[in-house]
Image (cartoon, rainbow, N blue to C red; front, side, top):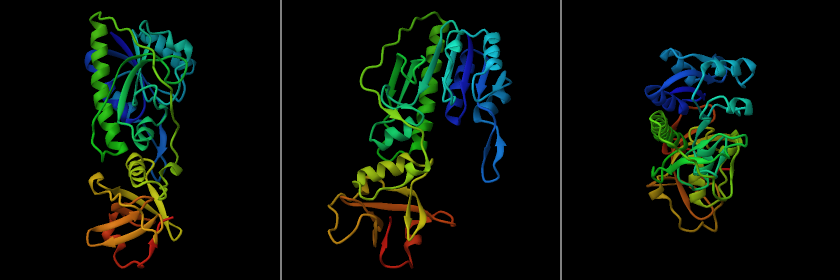
Length: 309
């Protein structure tokens, strides 16, 4: 079984590694080196780094242009696999592998098609999930071979969920590849239900709205951790909320009528931020220009009345 693999971030690496143990990866496609960090130094993608270490044929491109298409044709793949490559697979490329292309997507399709399914689903209160589908022209709309959810508990962050899903997804994709190699036939099932879309994240998605219910606020903080990061403002200065909760300590008790959403309360049990219907415990924060610190250390010595905006 000859495989062409397209993927870019760290979440794609487990699948590439697992498939490489089951089949011959004849080509790897990933996005071009991109500037990262404060110095904006050009850095290879995690998939590129892994493929180079493994000695796999590699093509770095932000779109499947004529050179990339020719590489894929010359690789003579039986199957194409894509995991978070970052660009659509053109129709002319979809027909090159004799078995077509499959995609590992991190949601329970048709829910949360698009760029940021893990964060969007967690923020909405949906469980972390994965789907393996046949790639078609329409975004994340192909029929599904298999899918499932993971029970990661009420305090899982977006980053933790993505790591767990990438590990489970890699096992599932490798299993399908192994079965295909043995001649087992798979027939995908059309997606059922109304699609929802996980649009690309921006920094604004991490801003906390303290007028929401405490469970909604806590879901957003978890979903946006570590990227793009949950944040609020105090006296016009940004304060990042790095850790809050846990879920068992959320105080859904009815908002203090004399208080305001975003009000910070310090007592013997900790530091709390008021939401619409209760209080959220804060654990680790990072004020603008400072390093991360415990919420209690941050609150110590500050003005008595603090209200996040």
